[in-house]
Amino acid sequence: MSPVDVVILTWNDGLLLRHAVDSVLGSVGVDARIIIVDNGSDDALNLPSHPSITLIRNDVNRGVAGGRNQGVQQGSAPYVLLLDSDARLVPDALAAMLTQLIEHPDIAVIGPVFVGQRPSESGGAAPTFRTKVDRLRGARSTYVGREEPEGDAWDVDVVIGACQCIRRSAYDRVNGIDERYFYGPEDVDFCMRLRNAGWRVQQLAAAKVHHPPRRRNRSLFTRRGVAHAWAVTQFLWRHRGFGREDRGFGREDRGFGREDRGFGREDRGFDENWRDVEKPVSP
Image (cartoon, rainbow, N blue to C red; front, side, top):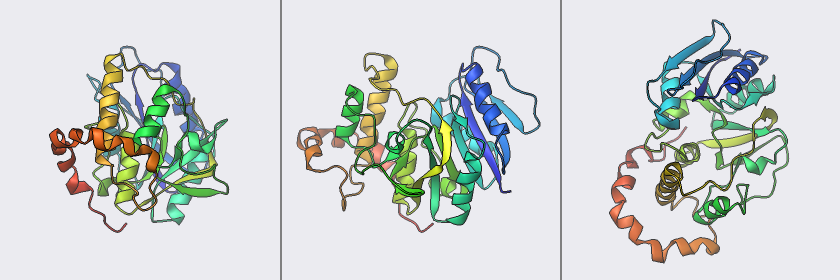
């Protein structure tokens, strides 16, 4: 059994965290070490006493990217599972994802199919300005650009961070998750940087995980909503040239172009700072 570090980030999650941990402990065919990163919870954590569990406590909330990087760096296994605290693994899900990574060395990330949801609700084509706006309006709940996939496994541009099984060498190649995203979309950005570096990202039908559907209609009229909207804007600018040959954007999204080109000039520093980790390399 190949060892895997399971990183679970928590912040005031109560019993949800316990259920997630129990699902990892109940996984079959794996050698899992669980690393829990507490991002400054107010209450004590309800955790089982188990030798495979390591707890890291932060005095402040470091954000999703910062907390997950902290957990990944605590471990050394060749594979890492990032798992949301409100997700629960089906017993053979982790073994299925690890087997796929081991058998296909050019794959960097495997995502599951969430129970009771379409595959496109948690993975698919790279998001665009138009699809992001549609998700914000509640008009879309899927990653579009492809029909619903068939078969055992299929390549995608992105899978969401609720459950990502990652090859550590690929994670290291792109310098991990970018911590300049405090509240999304760090997970999608991570996948797209891997794709740009020559790695593959897949969804696996045999990997089943319980997780509630992604929230829609996130309010912009809150501090968190504004922060998320700004992060999405930076993300879209950074990946504006992604996939030009098969253009997930499409012509309908060119409206992001001319009237918004002024955005690029004042924010080029954000883009330039990342060029050192975006040069394509061979896996």
